[in-house]
Image 1 (cartoon, rainbow, N blue to C red):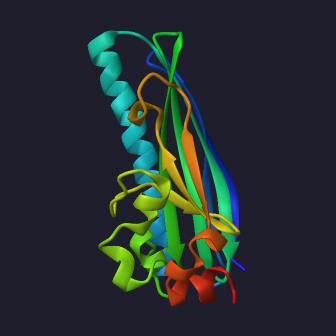
Image 2 (cartoon, helix red, strand yellow):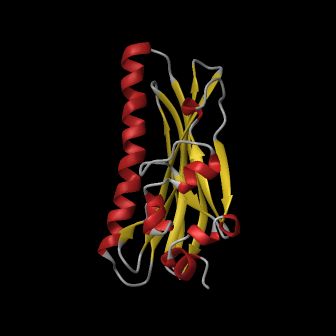
Length: 188
């Protein structure tokens, strides 16, 4: 089984108050793909921190940012997790941004939402029709034990500071699921 360690970074200076919890994936054997995943996660965190430092140059307001993660699925060497980047903007408004990561370590591949659906239904965007949303290859999603969960950052939904999630149960779209999803994720 793949392990997940929680790593911490705290930054407190004249520009930022920053508390970061992020995942680091590990297995006993050294693995280049896992190193790439960990590097990608760390790069995304550093981009967010750099962006906040740049905002300080413009606004001169100190930023309070928090970064946390959730592990949603860790089975059959498939990992699905989300990282939530949060900023308290101008001391009163909360902005949340979510980034999801879905990996098949056996195949050494990123899992896209289209990988979960049979090829003949991919162009029809069956997930979009079921969820009444526009869904493309760049859609943030995570895999749960029995579902696909579409995730929207707070800035994607008008007038909210919450992360919105739409759950689509595998049983509700079973006839559209790819063989990969049924065998590797659902374990049937």
